[in-house]
Length: 457
Image (cartoon, rainbow, N blue to C red; front, side, top):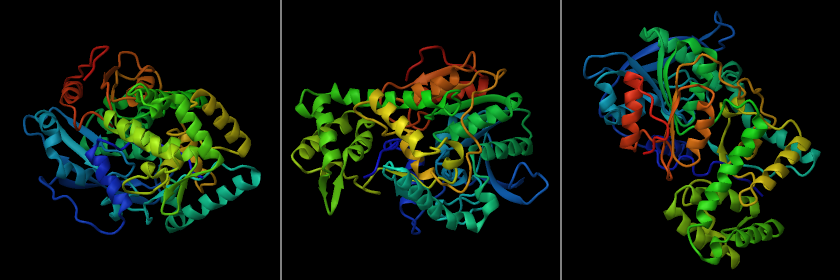
């Protein structure tokens, strides 16, 4: 049937929840009322940064001026990709109140993401949606069909503006950030990037290492790995560890690894009915379980009930309360240009087998091995693949909860003197909801005070 992805990665962050609801509900819906209007300006940038004299597009940039004496500006991005920076900042200015005492808050609506997600920069005429992750192809013919299917899904979006479609990677967003830095007159960039925007930051660090003053990577993952296969393995191991917390949470039969593995194997042989014509195979269960285990104790209890019911032949406890009913992923206009994809079925099969050995309880669920299946055959290449950070960067700071802190730590390990703020619990990003972490991050963004080793919040 279908496989897993970062099913719980948006849990706990209001900005990402707002964007997700917009993606899941394409029909117009009331927007949160702005509580403080930003100063809006426009920046003209090339649609293709390799052709600076070619066609230009417009970025809308917003600024909340400092409430005290301004010592500089912080450029912030909420991720998504495509989160509308201006709207989200206008509706949540209180989140930045302490930082604004010393810094101007600057954000922008990223290129390509338009009215559907309430962005105001030059838009790529697309329908932003999520689609179920397909099955792993069983033979070369299936792999070719998957390639054609993905190409067909992308074509209406690509054909509307082929040039912009091909220039939507995190590196393109990073070059836009450099144009914004120059426009606001900052000698070096001070940047806060949440979730997917952490990849914009990592791309910026590679492209403009001499222009980085300070950079916070909050609740993000490692796009700076030298060995991508190893990074996939570490991602699978993190998901296995998350499942291990669930197993340790109770003594019921449903909390035993052997019981879970037996259920997954049974579902792989015969998908388990989940009501309303649904049936889940083992990979579906592994993917959907991720959304439970990443919630902590609340999710663990619900997962135990769902597993118990599924063992009796009713997998309805795994059906998401809203959104798609199978593990899904966003259409990958940005994502498919950022992450390696399988070149063929042989490569795919070897990776799947390796991850299943490494993570017997979670397999490929929650890794890019499944999330990028929708990129096979995509009519735009991987123009911004993961790559190590350069030498000479100033200390960076990362933040994250379970799993995310481990991933961002692998980024920071490449930059001597960097610091990390960990939260030993569930959640996605720390700045919006963790006052302790917000204090550490603000001290770094203003005064370049790097959190001490072992800092937890």
